[in-house]
Amino acid sequence: MIEDRPQRILLPVNAGFMALTTLLALLFNLLPWRDMVGLPDMLALVIVFWCIHQPRRMGIGAAWALGLIMDAANGALLGQHAFAYCMLAFAAVQLSRRLLWFRIWPQALHVLLLLLGTQLLMLSVRLAATGAFPGFAWFAGSAIAALLWPAVTFLLLLPQRRPETVDVDRPI
Amino acid sequence: MERQPPPFFNRGPAPLVRLMFFAVLALLLMVLDARFRVAEPLRAGLALLAYPIQRVAMAPVQLAAGVADFFSSQVQLQRENDALREKQLQAAKDLVTLEALSAENAQLRRLVEARERMPRKSTLAEILYAGRDPFSRKVIINKGGREEIQPGLPVVDDIGVIGQVTRVYPLLSEVTLITDKDHAIPVQVVRNGLRAVAYGAGDGASLDLRFMAANADILNGDALVTSGIDGIYPPGIPVAKVSRIERDAAYAFAKIACIPAAGTDRHSQVLVLAKDTNLPVAPEVEQTPVRPAKAKRGRRRE
Image 1 (tube, chains in turn red, yellow):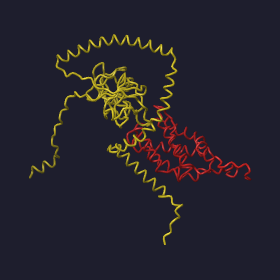
Image 2 (cartoon, chains in turn cyan, blue; image 1 turned 90 degrees about the vertical axis):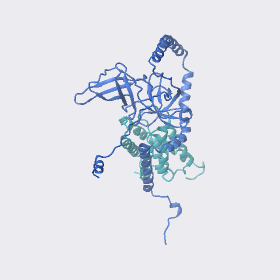
Image 3 (spheres, one colour; image 1 turned 45 degrees about the horizontal axis):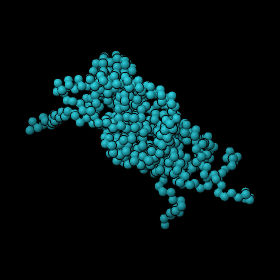
């Protein structure tokens, strides 16, 4: 099944681009959404992406720090996002060797499970700390984020797909 | 001889070790934050760090609102103008009666030597955004510790109470809405003066009156205002309207749901009211020495 599709050799990733995309995802999460339900957690999606594609550069510590910023900015319980995100990063790093052999939609299915698990973790933490149940529509955010996985993969790998030098006379 | 992997294979501690470290750190933070409230300086620092990012995130929305304002048609403005003029006429009439009434009220109060209520200082603030935490109802306003906002101050809009300041950062502060599950507000029924406490239901749209007897005199549509006995909210500000009452003989208490009067999720301008400086001194709690009965008996025997 693997041999029938071409494998692209990617350029090495640019650390600045990783930081920029992570910052953009954080910005998306901090947009003033008011009380809209079913929003995808873009930051979690981007963390999963970089943990899978660059497990040596994006890891548990970075995810933890980003989660802490999310907590402070949203007035959530301090550590709630940090806890869920470091679990998410761990799972993604563990899956990273296996997941890239799948095609894009099975990958999205894996990502859906990861994101749902993250939301369940946050839910259990908040219910333990006397929070209210936010309703099932909240879980729709994970499904939307998983649907966005192919687009995110395409966009975030774009700079690495660029040919380094264009050589018309190259034999292969 | 010890065998070490070459340095380019070295990836630091194992992922599981790292996970354990960070997960325990996060759990520790959560316990400290929820139970002991000692993580506040850290939270304030992080909030300051996130502040520029938030301002950048706000920018496109504000820009879009500005553009929409610019292109709002003249007809719309005209209509709005007419409506406002009509409203102002009515308000002027009300204002005259209000002035007369307040003068009369002041005189009556002086007559009974009642303590005159000082008008509170207030700060106009703007709601920047609602917290993206689906478990609680909070909004962030653009006035903070620099404008002498303190935790505990009530926040109102043009209709009624919307909530209470719960955390203050240097430039922002966090307001817990009255619909939050952890928020309680003492209220009074306008019709008969019955006092109660309204708790947020947590679903973002309603409040509960808990612990009201099943035969309590409350009707559908009753208006609830702040009773002011807590010393935080000034008395007489609209809070909610009773929307549904379930009286079940099997339970001692009635289930009463209310709809908040103020637009807890609509307006963007709010007023933060300063503390009432004219409060009576709270009665001192009598210190009765609590001694276990057994110890007493033992001492007597000696």
